Image (cartoon, rainbow, N blue to C red):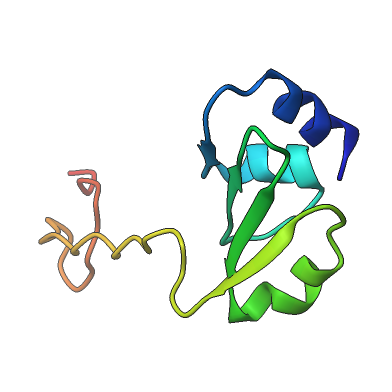
Length: 97
């Protein structure tokens, strides 16, 4: 377990779910586009990630890996294209007159 994670555990009074990927990386060193970390006051830390990152997650010391079937973070749908004032192309901006 990293020293950062140990310091967090020492100050916890209840479970903490970390879903921000920057914070997951800061606490564990695990870099992923899909992860969540559940930290408990007794020192148990569980790292949730999908099958794409299982091998890399196994290398993280001091955490229990929990593979998930689906991404832990929702994927964002692409915004719909809008009608353009420019003939022949979709655009989110207005064409210059």
